[in-house]
Length: 234
Ligand SMILES: Nc1nc2c(ncn2[C@@H]2O[C@H](COP(=O)(O)OP(=O)(O)OP(=O)(O)O)[C@@H](O)[C@H]2O)c(=O)[nH]1
Ligand SMILES: [Mg+2]
Image (cartoon, rainbow, N blue to C red):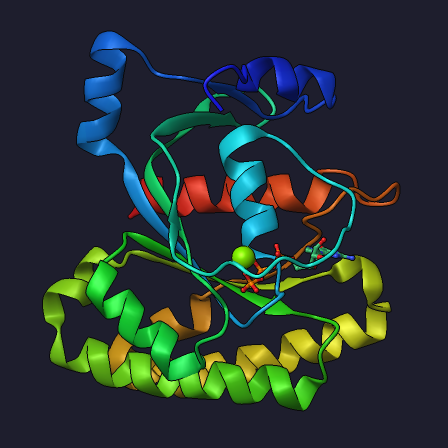
């Protein structure tokens, strides 16, 4: 990967609102000191690795055969400039991409062990609404118990975003009904640990993590921008 120039790739793919630069020298140290640890989790085949590759390298692939991630995969340090005027920096100390095989409470336990600043929970929008909500219920009920016990983690984990991925495969009706169901499950599942107000504000966002003519990089860039904004705010 050392030969890849992420900025060049970004330009090649026509990513206008999003450029990347590899921090060097002092920049590297500064980024290391303030960068966020981001954890990508969610059930298998939800699109975690596709998103992780885009976040790190600006590479968006066509939908392809699913190769399951077997061990947690950690990205290198990098910085992303987002927003139309590239005014917002997302400094990433590491992104950890988890294997999806674990169930929801297993992923909540991994979050407890990894102690990230941000967790993005990827859900496979093509699965049935019942399956999606069951995973979210399991995850939230375990995470709620963890966060009630662990005040320091509650503070450190400033950013939580749920993502309904594969939006390209859903009708508007399917997407909005999944969004409503996930939102309800998240509010009910995390209000006890985070308070009603904070739980109600947890974003549920659509994403497309593979190359499609209709969506391009619009949804994935919006998600990254939201991540950068929330990390900065908190
Ligand atoms: N249509 C469509 N396919 C997607 C999207 N995101 C990922 N895929 C496809 O879905 C499959 C799984 O994607 P991955 O990124 O490997 O999913 P993962 O969550 O890392 O899977 P595990 O490592 O098994 O947990 C691959 O075939 C991808 O090409 C999307 O937004 N839309
Ligand atoms: Mg994977």
